[in-house]
Image 1 (tube, rainbow, N blue to C red):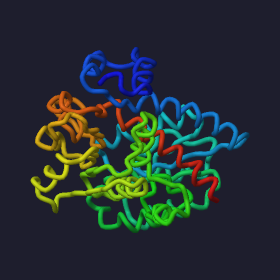
Image 2 (cartoon, rainbow, N blue to C red):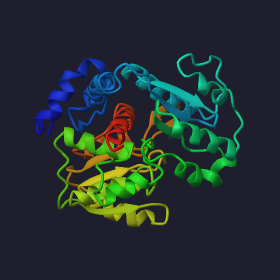
Image 3 (cartoon, helix red, strand yellow):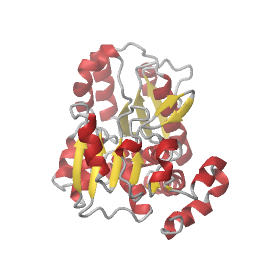
Length: 330
């Protein structure tokens, strides 16, 4: 089983020195699908693209972050670091900044604002939409309780050519009608990972997508349908038995609910030929874990993504790659 995919084995051996020993040992039983090595390759490509596309100009990405949430803060920091590595400035709005921007002084009044009022945020988004140096706008979700009712309005205010997350729905709608080759970051990461490991041919395959969010589940289901898969998409309106029965007969299981260890051996077939893609992220006993109970299922599947090192790093790389997809559409 370990040697069935040459690209899997090559990717594994190329990056073996970077990965925890527990992952190396597990690979003897189930082939792990690492996203980190792919993300590093995309990062190098994007760094070169920033230099060639934005030559002699300074561009930035804006992240609107209005909640003191640890998990979100960590994710925002990852985005900042990635942007810095490829040569793009990244500014955080909604959290008081100690330092002013010398390169973009017109941003400083907005950087000092910490009020979380709808009209103030809309004013900021309007300013960023008009700023030619801003190449991407991200509203970090989830929003705090006082802003939840305005979520759709705030997302819709983002210029579709700067909506690199794809959350406003405009570019996703164009993608549905094949008017643009655009995929939101997380589903794009999943498809990129499958293609890299020669697992992207899902034509005629039964696939289960657990979670119907507009960020992950729905756009991912759309991409899989485009490829000819037979897709079942589930959420809390479905019973556990309905989901398990469909999953047991599926070739692929994708889970992106954020519910820790939702998927266990009860979701699996007995053939040990299934491919499991974990898109969830949470913590248990102080350690990062996903939707899939990794330790419980690892000996009963063909391929599986780990948490961490799986979809997460690739999602951030996919997010920044969307900058150039939208830039070329202008």
